[in-house]
Figure 1 (cartoon, rainbow, N blue to C red):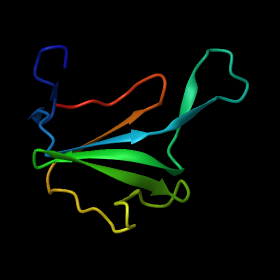
Figure 2 (spheres, rainbow, N blue to C red; figure 1 turned 90 degrees about the horizontal axis):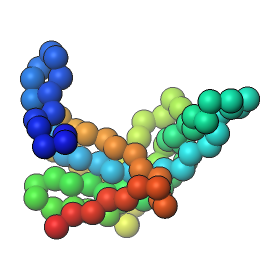
Figure 3 (cartoon, rainbow, N blue to C red; figure 1 turned 30 degrees about the vertical axis):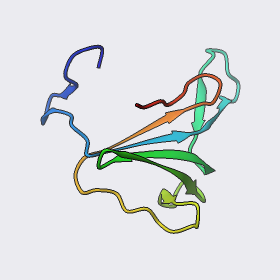
Figure 4 (cartoon, helix red, strand yellow; figure 1 turned 90 degrees about the vertical axis):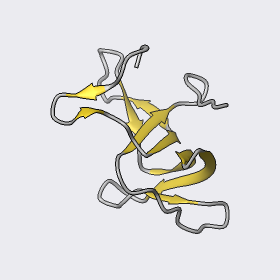
Amino acid sequence: MAGALHTDREDGQIAPNTVVAMEVGVEARAQNYDGYEDVKTTGSGKAYIFQNGTVATATWSKADINSPLKLTDESGKDIALNRGQTWIAAFTPGRGSVSWQ
């Protein structure tokens, strides 16, 4: 992060085996006076899964707040994630993006 190793105070360097970037929507908080928005993590949207040196386009879905997050390929099959640390990030189209080389 910002040219330095990203660490946490308990385990040291954060080095995820898998990174999932989810395209999400946002909505203003009720009675919003501070300008904050809430990220919508229920419903579904596009996702990018980075693991094993490749990227896969996927669909994320979460029926409700108590349901597990599902990641599926274009045929609807569940995508298996590597064991180990997984980093999940959210971005909003038009305000953020994902790119890779």
